[in-house]
Image (tube, rainbow, N blue to C red; front, side, top):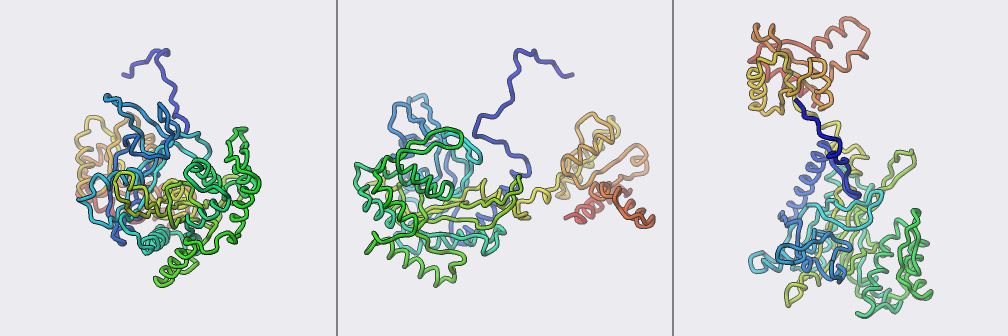
Length: 484
């Protein structure tokens, strides 16, 4: 008997803004996607690693605000020792801490990949969450540009392994040294202007979303979005803004002799030698990664195809991942610098893209629910449990109905579970040593089936039939194979 809870104690069921639940299909699809990513990464010699959700706030780095309560941008709290801890902002800073802490034990170069949730204490919005999943791959301890080229090759191979066709994506490569040259030409060099440079980088990183007019506003006084919220800009002078905007428009006149251009040429040669043409990976000097710790080549994985949105208008997913070289980050923990390069996939965005193109890897329609064993006689629960156990021992996902409803409601329950098959045994079947196998997919299609009576009866017989109990497993397997 259900106890009624007094009205005054009820809590409104509501998620905090910026967070989301995931259903069984999304969980299963994401796991399949990550397994395929991990398979490709393993082909390149990258080993899996898992780091905790929580790090010391100090370990997360200089990119966090220096305040008494460091919770702007990150979720932070103090433990019993009054030490500040934070939920990880990304997967790179924890990797740098792990490498420094285990420096003598790990092989170098160190090739590793990680997948997990990260947390941002920022204003949520459409498609912008406070908790989301990333999947990173990094090579630590190699200064060779071949490491950067390999990351780009692996990103291309990964997208194709997930079902994205060649021509529907591109891996774009630039170099932070190229951008640094532009910033210096705009009189934004030097440690005293580091904060301004970071604002400029974040503004440039919004080029795809806001276009040149929006970036121009963020380089100046600031920009008000459609909701009325105002984002303070970098406060650059008009001539500084023009130098940055000219570069974003394709001009490299201020970059004669820039080391970044030479490095891009070397990466292009490595890609060509490995058979990765510009249809898969190409040099693009408009690419910018917003985080300041990048020190060399930077990468962006962009999906180029369009799908129809809910309003029928074309939608492009755009960037689903990016990364670059960050030679100084591990050096925060050790006296010597350690070169590193890596790439991060936005798991949720890539998953949504795979759903949009109907990838069988994550297609919810392909994820069948368990076989449901109906309970017709409440005093025979042990018999039904034995049937379920037999199915499970044969490797078939199965469950016994645990509610109190009748037969029709139980079949509706099986439909909601996405089940393809149900097993029914009433007292008559039990006496005869039989079970009834119901193909729920065929059963649902009978109403629109052929008008030919012979064909209809044949379909009906396939949709529901009796077998001896020892033959139950084989019969269920045949039904499941029919819809595999």
